[in-house]
Length: 308
Image (cartoon, rainbow, N blue to C red):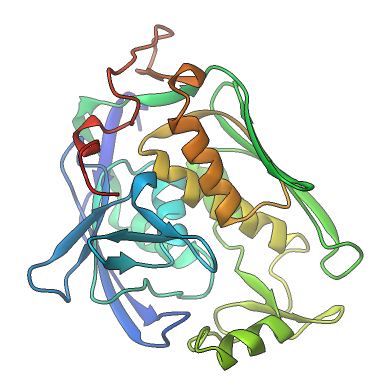
């Protein structure tokens, strides 16, 4: 498919599953959307329905997942869905959900990817704009950091280090294409430690969590009977999360993302730091090296007056 035009899904995708934290059964639909609509979540269980653009300015929490909110209405755990859409190059979609949290499915982005590939992706008659990183930008917290610097295409280098505890130190590099994302990153499941899962449940969280939708670690062993899908599955899942979180820039990114011991909060800080520094990036249309800069620094100027 040509990289020149914006895209959307050819037909609607329907998914159903358990929400990780509420434990409720959730139904969702990813439907086609017109050019320049972007990715938008719609709470269909409310009357009237509430639509929340997948933009950084609507992030309300990053504690256990990435949460978007508008006027007191939230949609939680959006990162795996966004990663699948961004990873496959889908620019515009209406994402309907009948509850406050997306289904966790198997803990990875693979069910989304499989459904989207079955539905197909089609180009729209409008040129795509990409955010090109012009200057390096870094955010850090102690020994954790996120850095993005100029590069051709979108690349991710990610490392984790659990100070001798399993899974130990891991790193992975991804030169992003839809094929590489689908094969190398999408199948990687979310992971956590047994004592953390037990703590969350005692505090009313992770009610839908199980070995069916997460990798659970106790000591130096994986409790899931099937083990890991790949030896470095944990760091690959971190890349999955980062792809989803950076999709909240509102456009594809051209640059090299380098992260050490990151997470949703640090990813969000990097996106917000970029949006606050319009001199660090520019808009670029395909096959053009001439930047186009907006009067307003936000990637979607029509949202500038939207409530935070």
